[in-house]
Image (cartoon, rainbow, N blue to C red; front, side, top):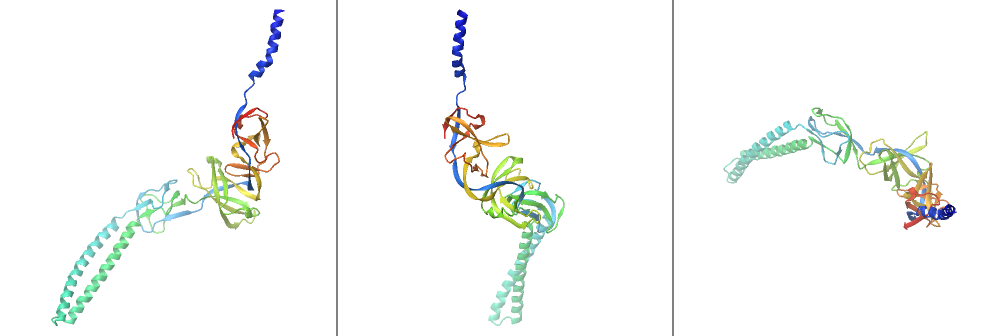
Length: 349
């Protein structure tokens, strides 16, 4: 009898033990759903490209003595790319300076003679011919000194242009010269791409072209670098493909280290006119088995709701369905460990 009584007591306490062992409510953070005028978007694949690429060349000839160029290296506008040998230019500058000094001395001498002859001419003690000869010699020496000044300026300009500099902030795509080679005027030294003119080029159907507006912001993804960026529509290249009837849309993006020309990018371009959509933060999205869901709260329990995404921004998705309403709470923190109908405790919203 004693064993039977103990067994009955254990059975009677079992539900209490099971109840006390149930997990506590999951702690979650929610935000209310908002509404916004948004256009439906479509994810299109494109490529990263530099909208401004320069085949940088030199203006003077010379032997390359210092080369700062290497593929992938970045330069700021005005930074030296390479330097040419300037020994001959500097020697010519020394020669011209000495010639100028000689002409200046002769000019001073003739000037004094001219003043003396002018004084004597007023006293009829010198001939007009002697005075005119001295005056013409003085003028000739002045012109010669002016010519030497211009030649010196040209040599100094040539000296300055013996350093080939970056025309803008950019990154070297290709090096085309090596140290020790001869550089002639107009000969490219490298291909420099502007880091301030990075774009994503996307082929957009001509039927969607009317929905693209210059200045419109577009979410951009570069999966190879795990980058999420905000791009700005720059406009279309005004040539449509004859076969596909599509045109290239250019979307500017900020430069990011590691980004390469022709790298694949994805853009969420406008695919329709604006409509009122329920906007859900991206943090609320849960993906399971290739489908998209969000968790809402109903009677202190997690409610799993499937959603169909119509539009995407950098921070939210847009939907248009009866199961999602403005002001409805959606879980943005803690949703990765929730299960449908699990008890929850909202700690902030």
